[in-house]
Image: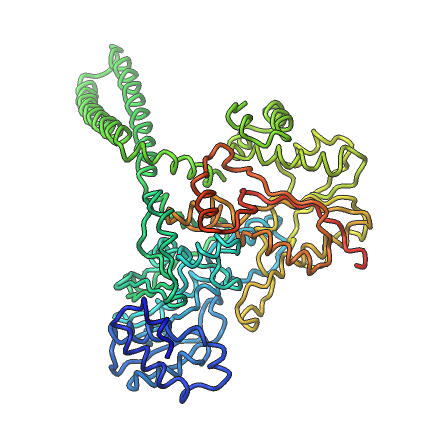
Length: 367
Length: 244
């Protein structure tokens, strides 16, 4: 057994690692042993987490992707599970599986291989740019939506995928290689990107772990220096992400819009920048409404000044005017409150420190 | 003109930047000025390099992608060029154009938008196969004449801004809807496979011209990484594969 890989591995996974090591030669073919030679830690961590989350109960399980080493190991470890495989194109809508069928879906190392849905060439003049010029996540979204459909209401999904922001990716980039863990992956996702995708497909995260499975004996501490220098987060920098997912909203229907309106820019969506921008916009709107209302009031007063109006109508109008004056007062109060809030945030130290990030975001999101 | 960018841009291209700044308002619409407000350095660098490589001669030029801001700039700066556009799907084979009719193909910020075209993606081990990009280069090679050239620009996947985004935990792409952002080596590998010679090549900062990335540069040096090609954009000048 390779002790190097165990050096940084969490102790709770060691017994699974040993199990994999003892059984792999019996269960797998020589070819598979060759292909998966760098995957034993990942299998061990997956087994450990599956055991922790679901245990060896009698449940119906669907594994996405063909029957391979992971299926063999899992079916031998969890003897009570009824495992089937789905090896069709996961990007195509309407999988040939009934709804509400499974207790558990194993979605291991799959999503990073999904391109966008294949779109037939059409005569639409905008076809090239709008339909295929951009990565719109339609393949992944379809896979998650179909998983949502075929899961029982209480069903769960176990999803593992490489971490696009891992130490390993940064290490490769420093050496001058592309930041992909494996160049043939379509996309390696960041946690924020995936969280966003789950939210869009009616799923939610129950448990989450980020574990080093590829370079468990490597020392990446030198990268911490640059993270410390920029006050960036050190958490979740290991090579693989493991999610335990449940269904939040059954049969969610996300219409995959072929034009690029899908934004996975989570950081931007939830940053102070965005809140401030929204606030600015609200302020502007409020200002406009105040001006509008004042003008309307003036117009109505002029109308009322005309002697031809009947008494009752004038009374009604006066009431309306009073109501609107109240509304304006409220809006003015809101406006003042939001101005002071805006000033408070924009003068705070944190906001000023964020200036470079704001600038870069503006650069990046300019299109 | 933004004086700060003017001072920080590679001084070989300062005069082109000045030209872009002086002419953009007369050439472009308000919406375009708004949309491309961060792209002026990139246009300046591209025009500068094209001036250096090809000059204002009488050339048959094909620009990949629809007619847009870049076309307007090219028409204004290179009045002798006869520019046409091709805005059909670039990933498919058999473009609707005759063989060998162009002297120059301009492919600015296009290749990062080309996805694969294999419908049987899953049979190919669900990998990224570069088939869209390869078809595009092959067809470009076909419609160019024997002395033809390709001017190709694309974001650099090794740039400082990428690394910065990884540090702060953002999606590790210059722009997340890009299908694939390439490194020099990766793109060079594909070009080599097409047997097209790289005549000239530059990696220049066109996005964060005024940014101080010195802490990243220092860190890369300190950790004995590869500090080559760390600017935001790759510019290639390619020849044709004469064997075809």
